[in-house]
Image (cartoon, rainbow, N blue to C red; front, side, top):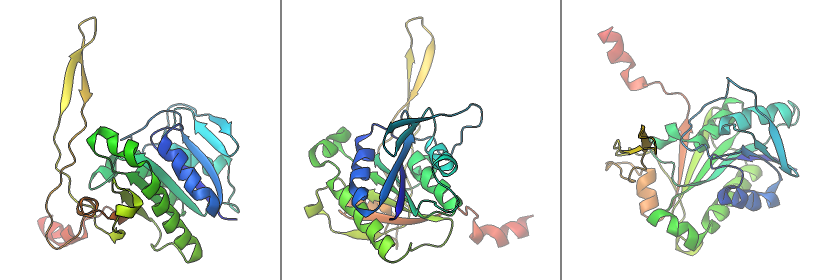
Length: 259
């Protein structure tokens, strides 16, 4: 039986995580290790300054006390698996909200997939795009996300993972029912339009504090390429191959001349 490790960055009680586990159990033996609390936008962070504890929630279901998604993958390979019996795949999600464009660098969801491929394990990050403050999830649920991830994982198990080492799939699901989706589209990561919104408040004792806001989902128009943003906007499931080599190869020659 195939071994599937799943995690997320929304916490162990997230509806998206539970939907992911339900979708994948028919395809293999599912082990869940997720953060105790929400760790959105924590990036590819490991906890190095304090010990962490596994807390068993149910059979093959653990929460990692105050751990990050990267911690969940890293420590699962130490506690729950052996070198001879490693996961066949790691799936991170279903994230509540998109992870497109440069948001991949912030994303705890994507970072769990990064950690898996660094450890030599194929991985997918999957996120549910929503609109109207989450009303679309309340209306449609995770039906399309569940159907899509089951299709991709089944295809991988029947054939092979489609990417070489140190690369993962970043999947974003449009806010639609399965019947309205136009299918899968392979995309490049787009370019977000970022603001720097933060609200300033004062606590009851008058001390000032800031709360970082949620930016609008805007992106730059791209000629000649289909981006994740455009695919979602057009009603497709976006599948983006992501690699961890961040070298700007196009600039090596010009930088050598500059140096």
